[in-house]
Image (cartoon, rainbow over all chains, first blue to last red):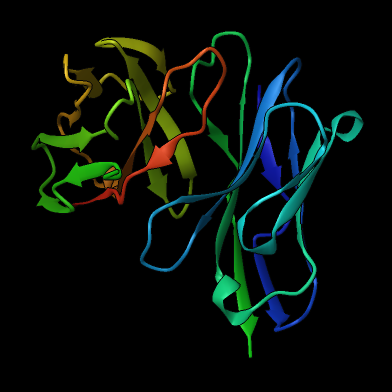
Amino acid sequence: AQSVSQHNHHVILSEAASLELGCNYSYGGTVNLFWYVQYPGQHLQLLLKYFSGDPLVKGIKGFEAEFIKSKFSFNLRKPSVQWSDTAEYFCAVNGGSNSGYALNFGKGTSLLVTP
Amino acid sequence: KAGVTQTPRYLIKTRGQQVTLSCSPISGHRSVSWYQQTPGQGLQFLFEYFSETQRNKGNFPGRFSGRQFSNSRSEMNVSTLELGDSALYLCASSFEGLTYNEQFFGPGTRLTVL
């Protein structure tokens, strides 16, 4: 079955620390990849997306992600986190010939950034 | 441009009742998808509508249904509510183009089943 796995469920970092959140998927064929963020009390927002081309994609607020096809991975990174990055982060995949616009989400990673 | 709107924002129902949730997509967006978000299962795809037709369906029982109107607005209905249906229900809309476009999410409807 197609699935999306996020390796870390809870991450606690100090401000200015570097962040890397892992995401792996089990899809064959062409995929569209996303990272969404949900700040406390707010709705899901798109951080970045990969459809094709350069596997290193840059998103909003200094986030970037790298698509490694051979590893079926799409890890999210940020060199220096801020307290305002405290949120829940979701990796999502759209893929398969009959998937339409449906997104398959990972379980999410809750990030707490301490001052 | 206004975002995706969902009504109502909060609902409290009792077991056995039914509920209808509404979603208005971003103007010009014709694809509407619904997701259920719970602490245990995370975000799960319910169904997707385009041009008033259900295009995809997730792995949910038949008690969960939806529809889309000619103006792209969508509703989802849950009949015979169970305690486990308590969740945040999210609607997302997309612009249908030649290639895939990202989904924009609404704030959700928080359903509590007592």
